[in-house]
Amino acid sequence: MEKLSVIIARDAEHVPSKKLARAILNQSLDKDCFELILVLFTDEEKEWIAFYEDLKHTVPITIDVVTEGNRASLANQGLKRSNYSIVLFLADDFVPCHDLFKLHLDAHRDSSNNKLIVFGPGISPAEQRDSSEFLCWLEDSGQLFGVSFTKKEIISDYYFYMANASVWRDLINLAGGFNEKLKYNAGDDYELGLRMKKLGAVSQFCPNALAIHDHPLKEEERYKQLYLAGFSAPLMSRSSFLQWLAFAKGLAKMVVFFLRHIVNRNDRGLLWRYKCQRVYMKGSADYFLRREKPV
Image (cartoon, rainbow, N blue to C red; front, side, top):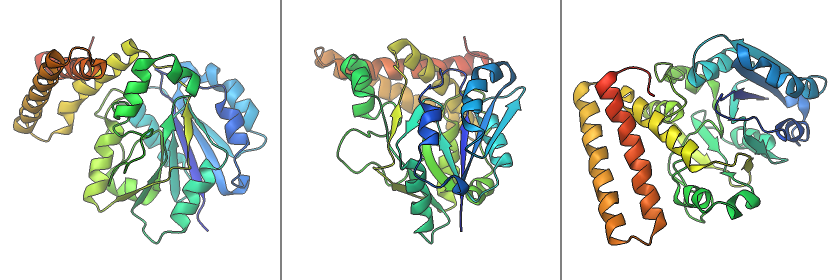
């Protein structure tokens, strides 16, 4: 009978949710059916001591330290330390609902497809959405995670992200794992998802596997993330020609968003879409100009 390895690769940009440990302890899935693997950087270890102490007597837990690297290298280390055939990636600022682990594992157990990716939604708390029009727009438009989890529509025919998604470990290994050349915490899950898709992976949305995104995201922080995503984007292309082609397409999108904003100046969503694309393109431009760590 398959079991679940839950991997949390610590993102240094986040403040870990204090509610996460309690939510893991309260999971409906039998504690014998999953393990928890925390991977973090050395200088962050003290921040996680309390988290570890709360869990170690109840949940099988491994805490591993990586002295250097990025989110991709942390995720790969978590995969190496995992003991079970199905792995669930959970963001350190996502608070899982009571049945989240069980829903992920049951979806894989009920399917004969060992190339299945199961993903659940991540939505900000109501009080955070009520206090931030920008956050509501990010979630409702799909700008935050690439799909919208707040609208009642087909999410995507194929999707993978590191915040709340499970997959067979052998499939990730077959795809080559996370690309550690993507130095910054942006695009590494998307790029791996593309490689898994080429191997025949399919996605299944599990709407009840809800996690609360316990992270009051501000505009400045989001723009920083997009800048790093833009800086990393050229590394996903296999040739200089494809890099420049993607850059040209991105510039064209930015111009279109700007023109739409000019025509509809009262639509703040169009303004934010343009600003997001502009910051993303600045990251890509800086990659081509300097090919060094972004500022």
